[in-house]
Length: 178
Image 1 (cartoon, rainbow, N blue to C red):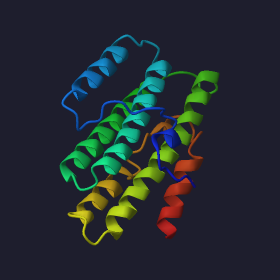
Image 2: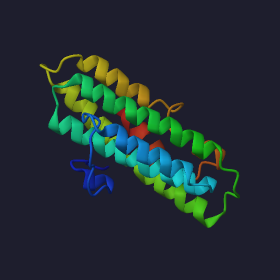
Image 3: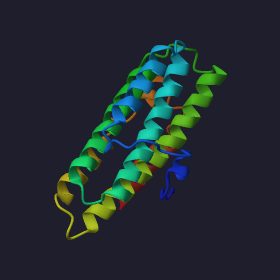
Image 4: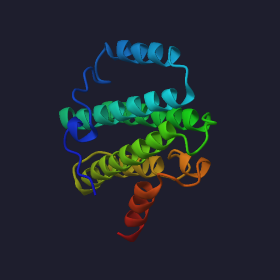
């Protein structure tokens, strides 16, 4: 499995502005403009995957820099959940041939990054669950478990004949054994 300790573990060099900043809206605005000017459905899904990955790195950084700030953590988790939903929408909009090389690459990238995100969320939930002083650790764990419900994870595995589902399936199976 993966151990996520820095944004670099997610392939993100720098997280930049965090959701705790008053200027975070500028980052979201930039992302919106980039979305607007991206036209190819596979390119749109790749963009959403990269944004989701950046937001996962932001979540990791918020947890490190403000572990006691439950409002900021909830905001970061909400951002991640919304990013996952947008990624799901982009994936569902793809009508390309499942053997298309760019689609196969996208599926592989989604598989790898989803596995890392699942590992990150698992680490955070474990940390919160094992901290007797963490406020609302049970609520945080429930949020984490809710995010990992198969209905909330990208449905691309069903849409494209389960290509790329290996890491997600393995993590979910390993999680249910423990």
